[in-house]
Amino acid sequence: MMTRPADLHRFARAERWVHWLIAVLVLICVATAAILYNGSLAVLVGNRHAVEIVHVYSGFALPVPLVLGLASRAYRADLSRLNRFTRADWLWFRSKTRRLAGMDVGKFNAGQKLNAALSAGSILVLFGTGTIMFFPDWTRLAWRTGATLMHDWFALAFGILVVGHLMYALRDREAMRGMLTGDVAKTWAADEHELWAAQQETTDESS
Image (cartoon, rainbow, N blue to C red; front, side):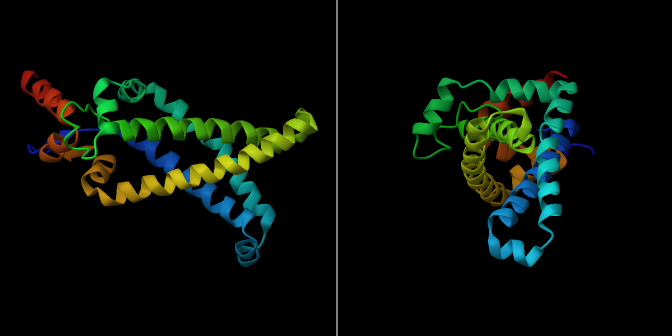
C-alpha cells in the first residue's frame, strides 16, 4: 500500500500482525475466562471442557507472536522505544492537558508505554501461573493455590486494562487507522507525537 503525501508511515506489517494476533488471542482468553467464571454464561454456552481447552491453548499461544516479531527490525526498534521513559513522558503524566505536554513526545506517549509494560507483565504472570495450574504435578500444593489466586486477580486487572485500551482505541480513529494500514495523517502525528512527526519528516526529506 502506497503512503499518501499527507501521511506518515507508523507501523510495519510485522508490527501490525503481532498486534492483531495478540489482540485476537487476548479477546479469546477474556471471553472464555468470563464464561468459566460466570455461572450464567457457563450454563448458556455449555460444554465447559471445550471452553477450558480454548482458554488454555489461547493463553499458551500468547507469547508466540511476541517472540516471532523479534525477527522484524521495526518491531525491535519499537520495543526499545516502549522500554525507555524520558523527561517528556513524566511531564505527560503530570499534565492535565496531555497535548500541551506532548510537544516532545516521540512515537509513543507515556500512557502507551505504561499500557505496553502492564500488558507484557500481565501476560507473563498469567502464562506462568496458568502453566502451574495446568500441570499440577509439577509443583507443590501451596504453589498451585497461590498461582490460582494470583491468576484470578491478574486476569481481572488485565481484563480491565484491555477494556480501557479498547475504549481509547475506538475513540481515536486515526490511531486505529495506523494499526490497520500502517499510515497516519501528518496533522494527527504533529498533534499527538510532535517529536516523532518532526523526525519522520526530516527522514523523508533526506531520503
